[in-house]
Image 1 (cartoon, rainbow, N blue to C red):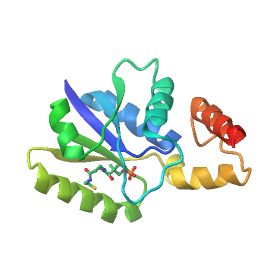
Image 2 (cartoon, rainbow, N blue to C red):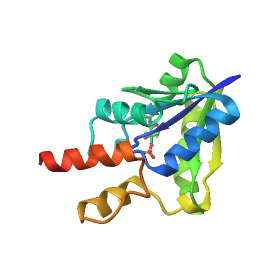
Image 3 (cartoon, rainbow, N blue to C red):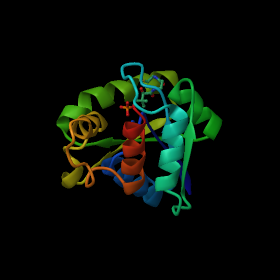
Amino acid sequence: MLKAVYPGSFDPLTNGHVYIAKRAADIFGKCVIAVLDNSEKKSMFSKAERVDMIRSVFKNDKNISVAAYDGLLVDFMKKEKSRVIVRGLRALSDFEYEFQIAQLNRQLAPEVETFFIATEPRFSFLASHAVKDVFKWGGNISDMVPQEILERMVKLQNKD
Ligand code: PNS
């Protein structure tokens, strides 16, 4: 059994992310969802909040765990003793960005391999930033994120 690491910013986790995590856990045996910072993005939820929210989504999945990490993904890979990074691909347009990250990580840690899982077509339009935008302007996102995530987004909105 292998342990795959599925890294991302997950701000917030979408149904597309859920599909990739479950698929990775099913294929590799175990999946650790790693919540990391993307220096290019400003987040809606703190890392601790995201971990908490994602844990609630996968509370019944024994082979999926969630962790936060401050630092490089390759250092997290060493800490977890894993050589398998999993990333989802929605469309060809994702490829350039993903390829760049994969090659960068390869240079930093040649022993680690990045595997890509193509998402199901029904999730191909889903992106965290789009979900946040639809939600902000009152659109219905109940088919885009798990119920637990929707509840936390509503809670956060009511706090403001
Ligand atoms: O979901 P995202 O925002 O596309 O995920 C990108 C992420 C968080 C996986 C990437 O930015 C990352 O690995 N950040 C941690 C710092 C790092 O290792 N940077 C070098 C590779 S980009």
